[in-house]
Image 1 (cartoon, helix red, strand yellow):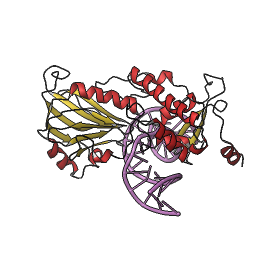
Image 2 (image 1 turned 45 degrees about the horizontal axis):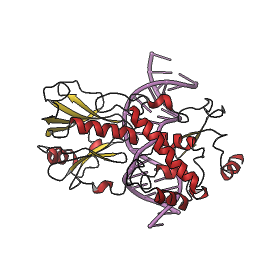
Image 3 (image 1 turned 45 degrees about the vertical axis):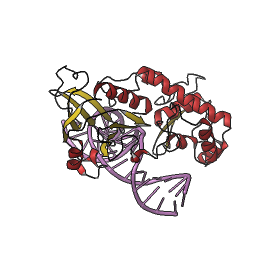
Image 4 (image 1 turned 30 degrees about the horizontal axis):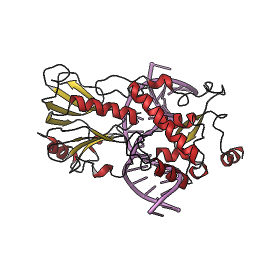
Length: 297
DNA sequence: ACGCGCTCCTGGGAGC
DNA sequence: TGCTCCCAGGAGCGCG
């Protein structure tokens, strides 16, 4: 489940291994991951052939590779997507969806021959790739995505104001990529646990100091994950070189149902929220009274 | 306009 | 042993 730190690790890997290479051929093995491209598989492939990759950029969980003609190859990993740099001779992965044959990889590619593949591998296909016309600087398809909390231009005061303006549950706001990008279910739960705030508290009921604390903890947990190369749970996430992350040992809330809270020893609880799971410590992160009453009947 | 909830998709694992 | 069902969740989309 790639969130900002994982996507950033992929971006950095792409920057090192494919920037400067030329896309010699594109093979779409499954149409779904190209569904966002108006040209379909054929148009997608045609638009990329002979284009040179000139950069590797990221906005929240979106990636894009600016091309030499001002367009961009965009990618979103969804839940299970991977970007792998492989020798062209390597056997196909089970869930290989799109293969980009590259010439002139900057370091000669993984086997030094220069015959390199960039491969989009995605089991569940929530993710996808597309060509963004004129999107080299910032693809218009990503213009609605907010800056991420590690971006030097992120506006802390505006974020605090935006959270306190909304009646929505604060976790929902954290997951809203138009307010703050890069936060997914895992880091949302971790940051809420660290700042001792229940995710179902309405944004407008939080004090400014609490929202600032939440932002601080989002940054902290992301920075720690980034330093360790990203979180991985089940090998669905693999970075550009195929190395799994190992941050999962550091989780305090996510996936910890029934385990004692590291702070107070109370058993961590799991509840359904927004068609997914939320994990929290019922003592450190008291359930809002309104929610409590409803749950009691 | 904005908030909210449904839906897409696959495979591992639990349960019968 | 083999079937069915549930679960994981990012984000686009449509409804109220």
